[in-house]
Image (cartoon, rainbow, N blue to C red; front, side, top):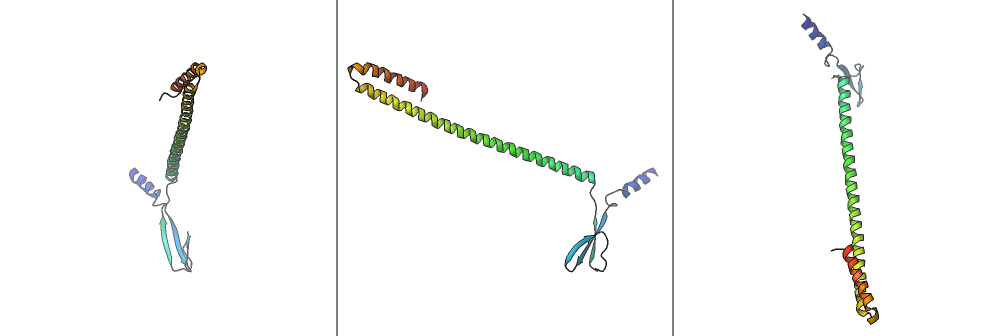
Length: 145
């Protein structure tokens, strides 16, 4: 007896039992929806709409929002990583260019110092050779390759 009573109560509160009726009315080519049957209009269609459980819909919406927020956060983090990597690559490229220019300048100065030592007269030859040797040593230290 108790089982039958429980079953009866469950049937009363089921979504099918709580379904509302919506009437679709078409008048002069215009469609409208109402909770009452259409008055004079012979073209009326009764639609049964089962309401969703309010807790279930809210929970589903909350899960969807949380998932979307997670996806957006991951995308933003990925974009930031890509931007940081691009900036690091640009910085490395600029640094390599600066280094190459500096080494080229040192090589040119070494070449000029060697030319000056070859052209120097007897009195200046020793001083120019020392200068050229020091310039070559500085180049070797700064730009080993």
